[in-house]
Amino acid sequence: MRKKLIAANWKMYKTPPDAHAYIAAFLPLVRDHQRDDIVLCPTFVCIPTVVEALRDSRIGAGGQDVSWEKEGPYTGEVSAHMLRSVGCSHVIIGHSERRQLFGETDDAVNRKLKMSLKAGLQPIVCVGEVLEEREAGLTEDVLRRQCGIAFRDISGLEAAPLIVAYEPVWAIGTGKTATPEMAADAHSVIRAEAARAFGDQVAETLRILYGGSVKPENAAALMSQPEIDGALVGGASLDPHSFARIVKY
Ligand code: PGA
Image (cartoon, rainbow, N blue to C red; front, side):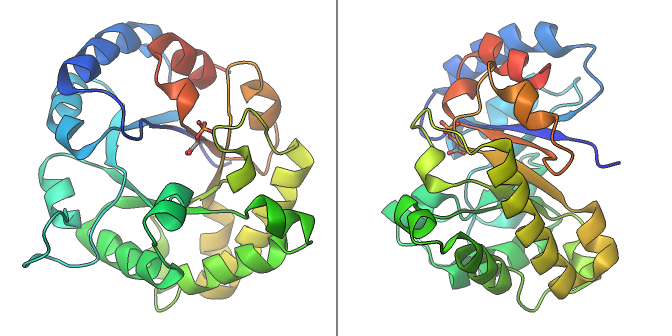
């Protein structure tokens, strides 16, 4: 039985004081919650505040992006080792906003994934099709390509901490969600790709999250699917009460 992970992606919202106030409100709401793992992914500048505020809790902190390089003259980049050094346990890689707005390629995702695993982070690799691809019947091909390239040259042993998030791009921030059946189909394609790359055992324990307009109102229906191992939540994670309701679906 895979333990579910509910992750908040705050995107480019909240200052450190906002983050502090959020956690002060959020912690009492989830204090006794043991059923699921919880991770908050704020902007880089909020990470120290978030890590400090979560110190006595079981909740993890993660970055929203990472460099594929270890260190060097790469203005604006932050390394996996640096994320670890400020207390991050997780990192989001290949979010569709990075792919679509900032030109991130499948190859970049692969390089970032390898570096993050090497640094001891638990990477959350995002994959998913855009609307035109779904309408053209290409969802499976897109997922196969994104996973195939992301997982390249990584051994089963190295891949053990990996988490994947299936985020259909047409469902992100739109209020539309994939039906539980669509998500279950996509998740089995991803699991098959993981089995091919890493072997059956790693694929069996791989957690595959769903993301895209997860809300308190639809969380229970999505999370009751055995193929869905958690959620990556954007908009509805920005309010501590709303996110707590999702965590306690
Ligand atoms: P959303 O975003 O929940 O606002 O749709 C999800 C995501 O981008 O990870």
